[in-house]
Amino acid sequence: MPSQSNVNLCSMLEIDLPIIMAPMFLVSNEKMILEALHSGITGAIPALNYRTTDDLRLAIRWIKSQSSKPFGINLIVNKSNFRYKEQLRICCEEKVDFIITSLGSPEEAIKKAHEVGIKVFCDVTDLNFALKVEQLGADAIIAVNKEAGGHAGKISFKDLLPQLVQKCSIPIISAGGVGDAKGIQRMLNLGAAGVSMGSLFIATKESPVSEEYKLACVQYGASDIVLTTKISGTPCTVINTPYVQEVGTTQNWVERFLSKNKRLKKWIKALTFIRGMKSLEKAAYGSTYKNVWCAGPSIEYVTEILPISAVVKKIREDFKA
Image 1 (cartoon, rainbow, N blue to C red):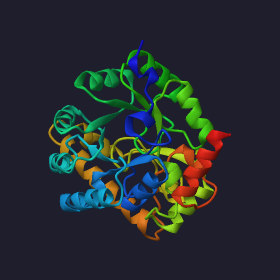
Image 2 (image 1 turned 60 degrees about the vertical axis):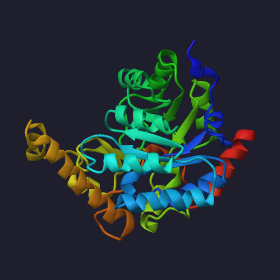
Image 3 (image 1 turned 120 degrees about the horizontal axis):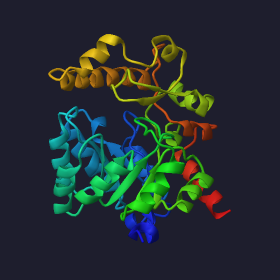
Image 4 (image 1 turned 135 degrees about the vertical axis):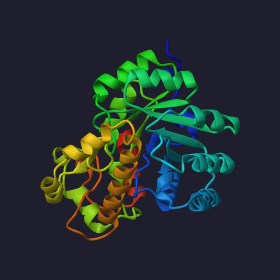
């Protein structure tokens, strides 16, 4: 029997509810993490949310000065992240509680993190990659399903989660499509050790994004989420605003051609990523008609802008009920 069947995220990280507030590009910040910790859950911040590695180090130290509870940092571990090695070094030096790896091989991150006692949770979208990261020594798997926000998977949680629980021997954390206590319980019933939830927390008081972005999460729903390859070259979920409808959701033929060129694809992918992230940043923090807002289907559960403590309190109360 898989050993993860008796493991819960609460016991792994000494938290009250088995929830990771997912790392969200441009959204997650220190204030959000601190509120999550005070509320009895945990959370992670993308290292890419900091312009310099010194900023990353200062953020980690500030959170540690305010709380002794566990939190994590998310690292993009493929070649598009030119600062990956420096970010990993700082995470290890500052001894964050866990690292979440995305979009690449986590081998180096697992090796170096384990040397200093840091847990590593790896994003996966299928069984093949799950088995690979387990073999590399990952402490847990984050099963990113097609209901997830951001860089979503291709398989529904209904198929992905039971498959990973059956075949893998480390804890599985389900990511995608959960926005309330019933959804969390559904994942736990399927064998998950916990859940990773992101979109539910975009429209919170502590979130640094614009009021327009937050209101969009309230006003739009699951049926308004579409996949686009124009941001990073990899399918990413966004709210289907009038601007997204205007520019389309697929790369043009020139972009597709260059992305397949063996000599150029590494650089084209990196440039596409940088350009896409800049457009997301402008939309996230400012008022512009070019609204490209990243979110997942679980914005369906967002009905008003609340403090993180209130969001978690409602989940807690519904759990008890």
